Image 1 (spheres, rainbow, N blue to C red):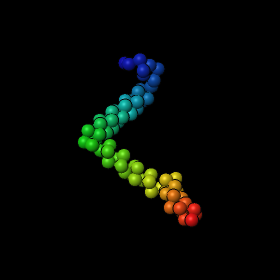
Image 2: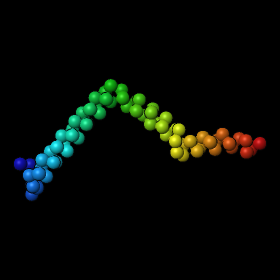
Image 3: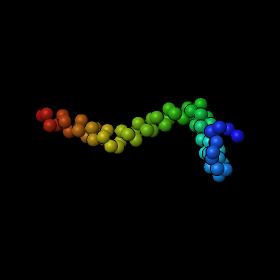
Image 4: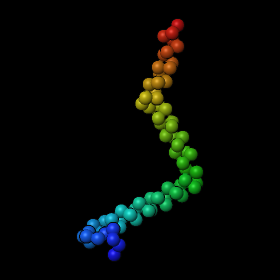
Length: 71
């Protein structure tokens, strides 16, 4: 048995193994998606979502209003 699991109960050991397996499966999935070029699409969609929400939307509104205030 690995030293990482020293002193752990059997149920805890199994749970850790399951969590590690799920993490490894997810990592393999996202590595595959990155190899297929997904990150470029994800980055664009995140920027688009950020652009249309929150502070960025407020800044765009202020930028549009600011020229009319200066006149």
